[in-house]
Image 1 (spheres, helix red, strand yellow):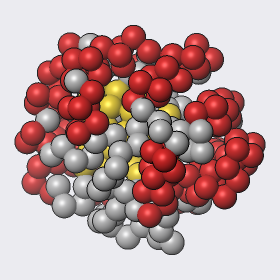
Image 2: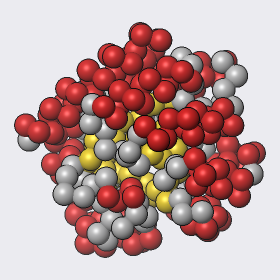
Image 3: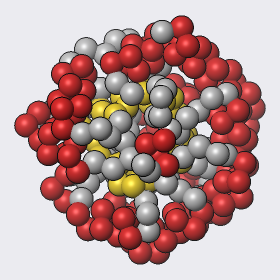
Image 4: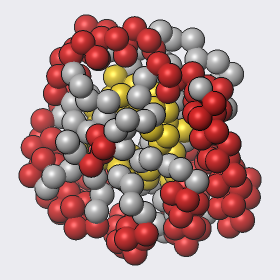
Length: 258
């Protein structure tokens, strides 16, 4: 079992997301400590990119702020290596193919292994084009996380059978962002996945309340929360870590009540 899959062992996983370098890397480190202290089971780290096509305005704004700060992929690897010994849960990068291509694929995944990153999510790489990434990632024991969307339909079984770590279920059409309700039939997607694989699956895109997190984790193996956390960071800046910690604590309480 991969370290990522262990995050789901006998429990529902809570998976927060933050963009590295927003508002700065020192604050990102403090936020990561708060995420871990308040019950994150797996953490997603966004590497900022100039054209984050899967992101809504909240996370796009975080990318812009981080890039304006001059944050580089090397800076992020250095930050991870500084804090990794304090955080004993799996961590995965969420970024885009171009970031890895420009860094150098072997070099990127070698650094992932060296700094203790466990996986990578690339929302702009379709299932049919993942092989070159998967091959290099696997060589360095990094899980390439597959995504399943409401539009995946006939491909769900095929994607699930080849999935590593966990499967990221995109709850709704469009880009990331908080939503009042999640209307797509996530349950049907989960049923298809579970017929094809034992790899755990978690739901993201739009989850912003303890009730939504509880509902999605009851249907699947966990919930992913990004925009709601990034909005807190945007509001409070360098003072955001304690606020993020409180938010995560409240979200986790929804799990326990379910």
